[in-house]
Image (cartoon, rainbow, N blue to C red; front, top):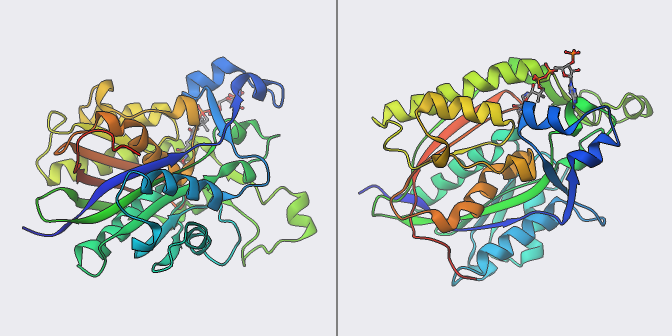
Length: 333
Ligand code: UT7
């Protein structure tokens, strides 16, 4: 049997500070009812105290490692999916590796916006499947609060901070990442981006004054593409493997908008109880949404469960991963 990359442990972290819809009402012209009805979000977590993305990733990884027989020195590769790195360079993954003491690992970051975790998971899986690596950490971590203009009601209600991590190990019993379908359409980049701070619009007084270091999103257009893109790719991957809604145990969707999640679940023929949703508590944590779902649902998951992971985001970049879960219930720390 083909060697697969199985998720053998998960970890997660969300900061303590809870930013509620009620608090947002004091900051911008919005209201709890609009936010809940249009997005499904009630609150999100915000990182405070001068901490950075790597600090949340370290918390998530330490939570994960405590459930395994391994130490950080056993890790061979660390991939960090993020759009809010500690610095423009070097990679946040390098800083994470140093902080956890992964002395024998190499590491790099991956930027595929909201699909970052899926891209990183598929990439990490290849290193394990090929036989070159035995223990790969994939972490999705984002401090979206540094990217958000808290005077812009179109975006500030959506995002939150958090980190989630998975460990990938070889499996020759059919458990692990079975298949992936990934897509990009760079012509969509104009609809969801941070305009300045890169080589096209280097940081200047003007870019700061124009608030071009914050998220810009044409929400309506992104919504239109996301609702179709995430459902299409999920169904395409299910069809490729002859799966119906009956065969899938859980949909693990990127948490951008509850309406997008519901549309994908409906198209895939999945009832609510088979859909992981925590957007109401964390909002859109970009690269952390999917691993945070796995972290929260770990206890319910069983060996052999069929999981469909799906995401759509800036770029446009979107995709789906079909994997068979490798273990029963929550691992003890
Ligand atoms: O994770 C990366 C991918 N991102 C996504 O998938 C996000 C996709 N987009 C969305 O989720 C939705 O488009 C939003 C939640 C961002 C917006 O919801 P919408 O239903 O598309 O609203 P809209 O932008 O069409 O705005 C409808 C109305 C507008 O007022 P008018 O022009 O009809 O008078 C907005 O100004 O709602 C207004 N509005 C708000 N009202 C209260 C926009 N933001 C708010 C707000 N509170 N926070």
